[in-house]
Length: 272
Image (cartoon, rainbow, N blue to C red; front, side, top):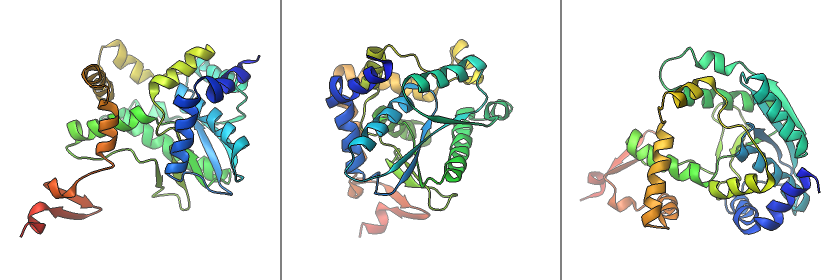
C-alpha cells in the first residue's frame, strides 16, 4: 500500500469518527460548500493543511454535488529544505500543488510589533490574489477546533473582547471571495494521531523569526493559552467543548455591552 493510500484509508477508516465524520459535519453544519464552487485549498506545508487537502479530495469523490479543487501553496521565503519537504509530502500524498513565491519573511522580520499577525495577514492577501487568478471563489484554510477555542481565550485574556474564529467569512478586499475552514470541528490531537499513524513529517512554523523566539525560550500567547487549556482539561474533560459552546450560545442579557460593527450597545441602554 502506498503512503497516499495509507493516508486516505486512515481518514476514512481508522479515524473515521474523529476526523472524517467531524470534517463532514462541519462542512454541512456551516454550509461551507455549494454546487459549482471552485475552492483553492491552501497548503502551508503543515499537518493541518495537508490533512485538509486529503479530506477535500475525499469529499469531492463522494459529494452529492460537483465542485472543483485547486491546491495552492505559498513560499513566503522558506529555506530550501523546507520548500523541498512541502513538495515531497504533496507528491507522496497525491496532492497536485501549485507553488507561488512571496518574500513575506524578509519583509516581516524588519517590522516591529506582532510579526506573526502581520505574516498571517500578508499570506492571506497573497492567497486571495492567487486563488482569484485561478478562477476560485473560495479559499480553504486548515484551522481546526483547537485554533477556535484558543482564539476565544486569547481574545478575552489579551484583547479584552469576546470573539472567535468563524467557520467562514466573506473577504473584505476581494469581491466574490470567501474563506472557509472545513476542519473547524476536528481536534488537533486527532490530526497528530493521523500524522503519526501514517509516519509523516510535516513543516511546523518555518519562519526564522519564530525559530529564534523558540531558541530564546519565548513562548507566544497562543502557546501559553494552549498550555492553560491543557491544564484545565486535566480537571474537566469538557473544558474544550464548554469554551466552544460558550460563543455559540451567548446570553446578551447578561453582558455589560456588545457591538455590531460600529454600533455599540450598553446594558444600560436596555435597562429601563
